[in-house]
Amino acid sequence: MQTLSIPAALSAEWDQLLRRCQEASLPLAELMGRASQLQTQGLGELAGELYRAWLDKQTGPLRVVALYNMGATLASIHKHAEAEQAYLQALALKPDFLQAKVNLGHQQEHLGQVENALKTWADAANDTSVGEIMGTDALELRLHALKNRARLLEQEKRYPEAEAVMRQALMLKADQGDVLQHYVHIRQKQCAWPVYEPVGAVTPNQLLLNTSLLAMLSYSDDPALQLLVAQRFVHEKVIKYAGPPLYKQSGKPREGRIRIGYLSGDLRMHAVGFLTPEIFELHDRSRFEVFAFCWSGEDGSAQRARIRSAMDQLIPLQGLSDEAAAQLIASMGIDVLVDLQGLTSGARPNILAYRPAPIQVSYLGLPGTSAIPGVDWILADRFVMPPEYLPFCTERPIYLDKCYQSSDRKRPIGATPTRSQLGLPEDAFVYCSFNNNHKYTEPMFQAWMRVLQAVPNSVLWLLADNAKARENMLAHAAAQGVAAERLIFAPRAAPPDYLARFQLADLVLDTFPYNAGTTANDCLWMGAPILTLSGRSYISRMAGSLLTAVGLPDLITYSVTEYEQRAIQIGQQPARALSYKRYLQEFGRSSALFDIPALVADMEAQFERMALAQREA
Image (cartoon, rainbow, N blue to C red; front, side, top):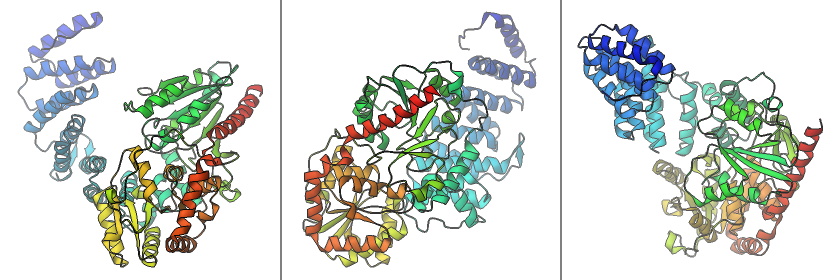
């Protein structure tokens, strides 16, 4: 028996409970009820100890129920090793106890036992010997096991296995929006085209409607579809807050310097963390106070340290509920809250729904509409948000004078490699695309293959995120008559070395509809020209905005045919690519694209105007 601290008010009752356990006179129902009360009072360790005392004196069939509940209690206070043992003991008594199997898998995952967790969930998913268990349908428990098995496999980048498990789940039940969402996106990650491949009784409409916003941005340039999936997510996941805005309840007077808050979980080694530090550093501290409200993990990187030092205050939101986080932000009198996350992975849109600041602005993290209630504005330029796009965006644009995108002129760059060091032919024309594989689409890949066929002494240098994507790309290339040696796959590299690679490329080929964002910024900074295709949506016009600001608008195309022709023309005239590179070397870094002081001054002028008007209202 552990030595536990017993609250004085419970001391007598606790002694009585232990005595009844030792006498085997405490009924299971009363045990469970009292343990639940202890948990509610924040005394989970006492609840666990009560179960142990009861189990020490019990040998009957009810032990399995107590063991299961003890496991759940210990799991709730993060005693995962002890919870694992409780579930294993329960399963030793009742091997077909499906709920215990499912929960055991979670404890094994918490303990870093990946293979054990995967096996446990596989056993649970394949257990068809049970019907309804403790009020829960066995099918739902099997589906729960399959979902978690697929999630963990995807997390481990074992994409083909994860997709197979998702298919298994969808064969059992077609109407599972969460599974469909991951099924579509995992096919994108593997370059498994067509992405919308039927499975079981799943309908084409279900595949479309359950596509995540990130996946839709890669799949379709239709801004109506992008708005549709954003609104569906908001409808299903974001709170319907009907109370008065929290900023009106805070009582904090808004006076003195304007307070700008940046809201994000990506202020670290992440695309957002790479593009934003100079903004934070260059804010005029005589007029503005700068805060970060973040749930980014401390990754120990120099980038994270730089971001932290650029803030007047960095307030961590880990451990706070969305409402508590919103109340904290409101209590600090923030004038302008800039959301750097949107609906991307790890987002906390509920914070914004409470309206903790009078002016809430979307920027950078999600290049497009989020449809989050409370986010009324989006930072943009007139290229990425033309008038035709505005009906499909819930936010109103704050137009910046030049390019919307920030940059970091202090980014460290590695030593310049040679082509031979990276497996590139010395005399070939090197096309390049280092965008994430989920941005690669079948129509654009086919265009790339036609370009290679038209430019004989050329290769395509690609990023391969995973083995299956590489295998699928090689198969698609072979189907179009392109030899495997003309596709050269680059592994991931540290940011300085990744930047240095761009100097070896002759022409970067952009993806569509999900354009390069940070990647386009990087290649232009390194003097590599990028050919883009601009469409109808914010996301498909990002690289065009950057090219306009850097002074190379002739690298913007507006159809696949034009894009393909331009890529061929440049490949057949290498001197043209060299002229672009010379231009970028001489004028690129002094262009409007990289004039970050001017960008920050523009942002500040807009924020100041809006904040002062709000204070006077």
